[in-house]
Length: 575
Image (cartoon, rainbow, N blue to C red; front, side, top):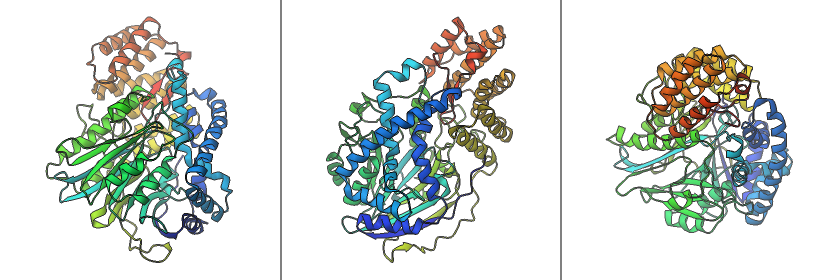
């Protein structure tokens, strides 16, 4: 399954009321490839993602049931939006009319709020741990702002990977929109064709940049403000970080978020964290000239009610946060734009003894199969740098887009030429593209056999990469091909020596060996597992090994394994 190549970068300028700007967007998107595909994807994305927590045999039933429940939640958020921000709703509806779509599709734009709230409800009901299932942990976004001594020339830069399960959709239509509203500051945002989401990856004429990140928390509420409108208000109304505190503090969000907000005029940044019940503001450490955020709460008070959907989600989010902060130490002279671009394509796992190894392509790293938008804001230079490549977009190629609020409404001729620069890391690109294709096929309901074939292509292109081997092994388990699974896991263990990833491999290696009747080899794997160090996440895997040793799962039960292709993890229901 191969995604279409990305369309050329589209830069648009709109002006007037929110409804007028929505209509102008729709008029210029009508007939262009990508917009229809994006809207169709939004309508089914939440149920598709959540249903990945179920074994393949029952996933279709789960998806239909989830779609019905998600529709109820989307309707509640849509009614709340009509109360809070009728002008933003009018913008969305005007866009849809101009595209020839029914305005009722506007409720699908709150898909991420609905998805996160559904996870929160499941956690409140105790469904996550009681079933042994785990939600496919889609949050994988990473942002880093640098300024002062952490910047090569002292200027503030704000880099962001947008990770979203829309490979082949979101990365297909790179778009930048410049808005000159009748009321408020001029602002812009980075998006894809058909997704009018100004509050997710945005910037304004005052030098503010903001990037939104999923959080999971118990405190959610359908009466609050959606993330698209929350960020929209900040970027349209705020000149300073104090303005951000005031405006953010005046709104209750429907769901749970973290936004890195930087101010070039003030030369600093902060993270805004929200739940339905409150908001917190996290500053850089004393003396630091950088700030990063990923997908876990940084504020100690809000962290109390945080939901962690799986151990791998925790390890992955913390690893990306660590890797982003370590980048400052790896660039003692400060980070230039090119350094930040490289960071957005970084595959180093800080929990591995060899994070710089060139054959590491997946796992607990900043880039992922879901990286569908990569951008570096340079507000002091009045420009941004944007990847126009296919997922994972952190590989590039990159183009420079000057700020362009002045001028006529319509397509902006900003002098941006299609990049002739090849994606970075040409040697690893075939493996990554095959991996992305496998994740997309899995999300769209392909059989384990079909996904396994794509993963075998990825392994063939990068035979020493341990994470791709692990996923191929899990899908082999799902098809009953235990010899294939044994070979992949054995090869992965030859390569992987990071404690968490090695522990995960040993858990599944022992399960497969025991189910195949190789008890002596399984005993050796269980013994090694218990002897590993215990950084984050390893204790839970050791406990799983102890349970398995007492009562090894059968080969038939192993076929119910639930892979997480995004976090490179797997669950055995009931374990």
